[in-house]
Image (tube, rainbow, N blue to C red):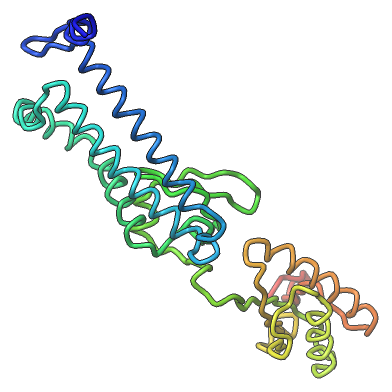
Length: 284
């Protein structure tokens, strides 16, 4: 016992009045290991299939992130206390430094606060599909300073949290299970409007991923510069890959237009010329 006591009281190094013994360092290591073990148990418990079936995965992830940060804050405070370092002494001694660092890292702190808001508020979760600055992405991770998301090209984007909280963001996942989309198309003047509307509806109904087929609608929206403009409206739950679905429907529309001799016109510009007294033509 005397040997163990001597080992624990053995001074590894000292900084000023603070002495770091083997016992203090060992206690700090044990606190870190216990924190990791507790977090592992909590993660396994939270993400069990039975719990996942009752609670959204995005909510579970946010809840786990909050627990993780709280536990690490408590662990760091315990480690500092174990090592004999008083937190209030550190804060008092470095007040001026902290002010300078705070001014220089305003944007970083803003992102940290935004990360806390995202986790606690729960308006945006992992797995949600967002539209940020015109780019549609699927949230992969929400961190304290930055979040990561995957766009439709399967590229991972690192997004500062303040960009999500401070700007206009469309959360497509807040919709119902289905979302309405539209495809615009123009046909040549003189085309049979009723036939075009019929063909557009039939083209959408052929696709297996169209939801609520009774709500598929086509409408004549405008007289364009060189075409009669139509709009096809349909519902789908394939939000993230909707451009692929639209492409497949456009192929069906093009095939049916050819079968029914419906023409999609080229852009046309009319030029009018008149002659002056010299016999030359000039553009009017």
